[in-house]
Image (cartoon, rainbow, N blue to C red; front, side, top):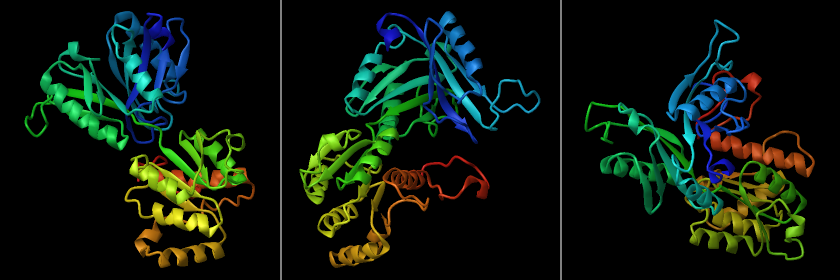
Length: 370
């Protein structure tokens, strides 16, 4: 943003597509400033040098470029990914002239408002390359080249934004749906900037402080909630975005009514006290779409908790969604180690990982979302 605000031009390289075991996901970016300094990464080091050179060239020519980088086994020093994956990287010049809506996008992200940026990365007419449509839930600004293209891409981008997904979409040259015409040629990269996923931690204990740190590190917007004001203080949980004094079940119902929990939300109940955790879990396990629900406690506590939840009317499919005792079997003992085991389980649930050592697993290292 510094270069943009100063009226300069930077080279922006964005991973738009990955194939096989690519080191960085779609949306990863590298920026080359006018002074030659670099921020970000597209490959973790494998092809950074080549991308740097291309970004510098694109700034000089003003012409965007879509470049594929893949594995090279003929020359160890060739530009390639040693992991065997393939990256498609779109490189473009970014300035107030080429991207006038950048401040709008940055402001939306800072305010936790969902916004998507749709950029043409391939087209038979090179004049279309780099054109953008900025898509919000109720409005779209900018333009791709035709009203038809704008309407089709805005509709699809809103679907991706709702799901928090980033992807490349394919159309005909004028935004035609592919089932309407055999002619293809326009590829649009949609980068979704959904609000940070939420982690709700119920129970203001030392384990919660360590978990709040881990959650923040992973990019969650962390809330610690406890009904006891003496424990639920901002001073005790500096890593949390919010510290709330309320009964967990009442707070969770309120968040549901506000539409503030979704399929990306992780709920961690750490209270060990049935008068707090059972009502909270009763609400959480009845929510139709929650990414993760876990509860701390011994196996005896777990069995007692299940009995109480069954008495409250929860079904076996409801209870099957509960991760309890919470976390993966890492042998953790300290609050910090326990927090690592909890977020490890959350990551495994999100991506469909089994939690086993990679040395004991064949096949791909990286998983698609579960």
